[in-house]
Length: 407
Image (cartoon, rainbow, N blue to C red; front, side, top):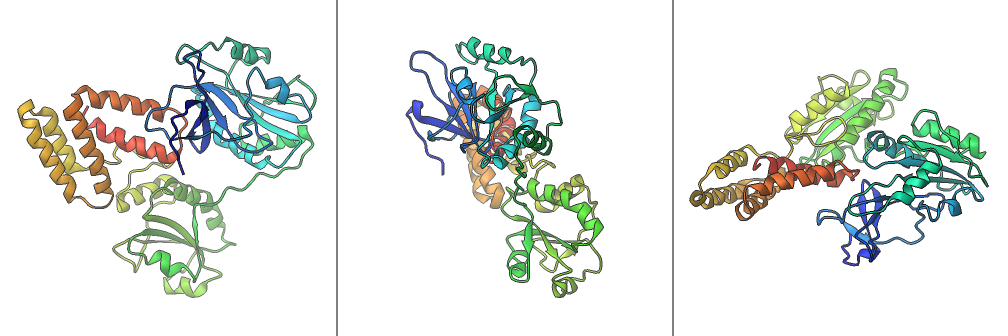
């Protein structure tokens, strides 16, 4: 649950599944964004950040938050446990790519009391912030590029730079070697729904769902090769409530396999909302092939990483009316706006949800002028350029796509 608070000194922002805490300083115009990963073996981050906009969810500050700053760095690092510290910049592309791997590492080492997984931001100026002291901290430890990952042994402030691959597996091997631990990486939950005779009909025959099913056998080599790609497909569409990516052990549940004419492995069948008898999936088995098939058959607009494309949210009938609104003379705009409102009322499903965005955008366009859409698109793009969670990314992308039709 997200809660809104007006007490700026006790708030943080949820972005990309992590806690981002701005603690406003009363005597200056600066604020900090703190990346918080709960757990006694996890250090967190600090960077400058703008005051959150109304689109960012703000909730109460968590207790027992450890933050790497110049003030407490040496109180936490070099003490009674080893520490892995990532020095990074929020705008750094390589750092953003590393983030999920580093978070996976932190999650896996939560219970390893002898190891501290932490991060330290190289601070940069947003609005009147004096970041010289934090620059000194990074310079002190020889940080000249991002990300820089260093290991600080127990009781030492003399770091050892990590030079290996930036994957959770390689980092875990490094920390286990340096820290004398034997921690195994936590296995992330699968986004592929596992079918059995108990839930098959309930899931697959649901006329409100489009369902893709892989019938596989555990010993099948082709099935094993397909598994990583199939997981990516499920992950890409996990936010689509009416799409299910599922699999069934056809070797274990032979009766179900025979019922659906499964004669080899893997067999892929698609059960759209309009045909619960099912149909063979005949497209390719690369990620892009699956994504293109689902987008075409289910009316979605996602890429292989699960991001919404520039077509997401666009409703053709409303698009045409928006063009009329933008081109209309002042005395004609009110009539076109009324037609937009009427069209929105006729829409159903996801189009109806998108229509509400069109309606609100048209109203703001009328009230705030032609520059409103352009400025709002730019603001949303700035938010999208940051590390935000997938739900907010979807929300901002839909708004940006629709507002772009007004710009």
